[in-house]
Amino acid sequence: MKVQVVEDILSANEQLALKNRRLFDEKDVFVLNIMAAPGAGKTSVIESIIEALGGQARVGMVDGDVASTIDADRVARLGVPAVQINTGGACHLDANMIATALPSLSLDEIDLLLVENVGNLICPTGFDLGEHLKVMIASTPEGDDKPYKYPGMFTAVDALLLNKVDLLPLLDFDLDYFRHGVEVLNPGVPFFPLSCKTGEGVPEWTEWLVQRWQAG
Amino acid sequence: MKVQVVEDILSANEQLALKNRRLFDEKDVFVLNIMAAPGAGKTSVIESIIEALGGQARVGMVDGDVASTIDADRVARLGVPAVQINTGGACHLDANMIATALPSLSLDEIDLLLVENVGNLICPTGFDLGEHLKVMIASTPEGDDKPYKYPGMFTAVDALLLNKVDLLPLLDFDLDYFRHGVEVLNPGVPFFPLSCKTGEGVPEWTEWLVQRWQAG
Image 1: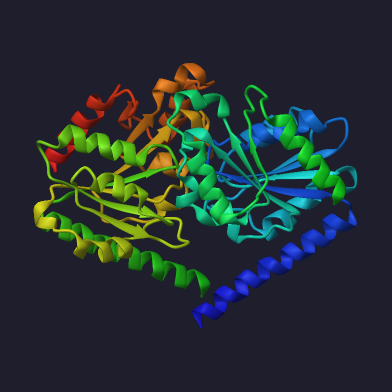
Image 2: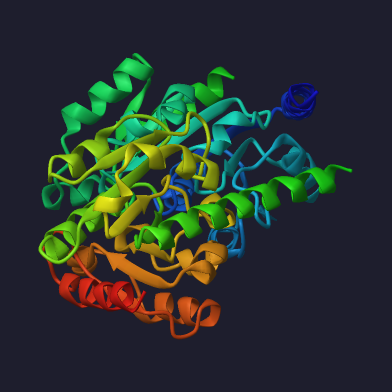
């Protein structure tokens, strides 16, 4: 009986995700689910997307955090409509939270919706939000062994960013070991080493994103 | 009815944690539950404890990870008995996992048991393992806003380490802002800025730990 309940819950999330995705497609909104460990640079990546695409796309943001509005405030200061979801204790966003947040955004005036998930490398992968792309941000100070320890996240994503490459000279980070771990889990996944601080690698990532967005 | 089920589960964990704690006390084993985000340096801190206390205490380790035995292997190479718990998909350790791992360790030959929790700033705080001290490791590259975003973890712990202070000159990390966030949540919590890489600050932390261990 317990297993039955779990299956019902998962299926409820999937049904709501499908409903979200239909709404996004109807409104012609392309949606990213951006996932990472705490402090990997999700908001910095979102800021760099807004800077790079400001002229081409109308961007919106949904921010998930256990507490605070720090990240949504950062993005709102750039003139981008941003909605904060405080999950209380929950360690991930789900499709129902997104559905609840959407009425606070004018989807008719948004081309690209950037969803910043809760900082967590485990649970967010289990919950489809209705997004079109799942993007993971790893960061160099976290170490080169993360694909081996958190395989679910690395397997689930459509693109992988490695942020904070400006710190590489100071760290014991073996890029080949990291990439080998990724390739075993998710062969050929688009991979973008970059630094939101120096801007290195950001154009390659945002150009790929524009192509994926324009391809629908 | 659903709330009832949740309460039963929590209470089951608490009962098992109590049982673990009784066993630890009976065997005179002092237990740390070490929690942090992925890549903050849990294993490096454990290595530095082993190095500092090698002569004074017989150390053991229980390592929780979604997958791999990388961290337990690192510690086992130091000659310390180490048991790996692979949680599969679970984002935290619980008292039952610890109880299941304990028969693999000779508690009679251990004074200090270091439990490395799953890399996650949210869920591990909800599960008492039977430990005597909860220790959190934050790290400077994660940013100075973590107390504001993950208040539960910062509130729950008996000691807070801030690792990777050797990187501070390269980061926009406001130590006063960080400490203010911590003080609001957990006034007076023992705080140890350190670098496992350079060794800076490690003696202050391990001396405090020895005192707490010897005080029981």
